[in-house]
Image (cartoon, rainbow, N blue to C red; front, side, top):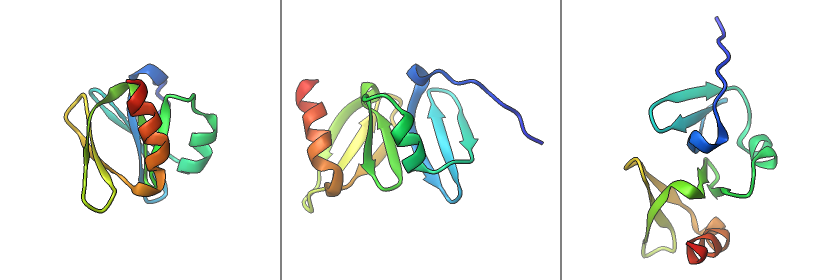
Length: 100
């Protein structure tokens, strides 16, 4: 069966593509959503950044960014989760990190 849960945008750490679903990761839970990342990206506010073809991150929860030799980054979120940010999305990520 289906269960609808309302999640505040302020609670979302990241959105991760998982097959035909999106994992909505909050501080304490993970929820599944049947949607595409590109559709969600167009409806989210500016603090949500596309950092990889499979990841959107809430910039408010980025704790640290570690550069890799190939131009990619490893983002550490405030809950300890680490995600890869590809160099394709580096320019947008750098603009946000400079403001922080």
